[in-house]
Image (cartoon, rainbow, N blue to C red; front, top):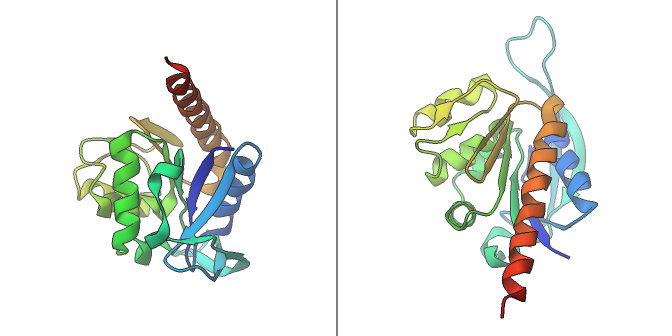
Length: 193
């Protein structure tokens, strides 16, 4: 079974993380990667009327399967970067940035939602590409030369970007289609004489 890497960390948004986890688990072996192999607390984000900031409450716990330093990107066909607060600190992890660069350079599908764009920006892989994210992270994308598009889903080369958790369905549908195509290409290459 093909493997997909899903990044987690303390403060990752629960829906941004669990929707891809469960959807991808239907067809792929999902591996949860983090700075260290341990249990992390996810958070639930809500945008309550009258509040200017996101209200954050405790979500579920989730244990990582592997540390970033131990990941061999060649073993995976796709990468998911969930949102929430986790990308604020994960973007400084040099092992993760190397993983992201490897996926992008090789053309393997990469999915990013919400604050996940902060990791892509820090990895330096979105210059000149159209992307989307939550409006609050628009400057993270534009400051590194990306082109911000205010749309539920933006596909640019092998990047699949989504703004909000309520837009997960079309985001995952497009990402899974790309993974399926990637699997077919890999299978066809193996069958060549």
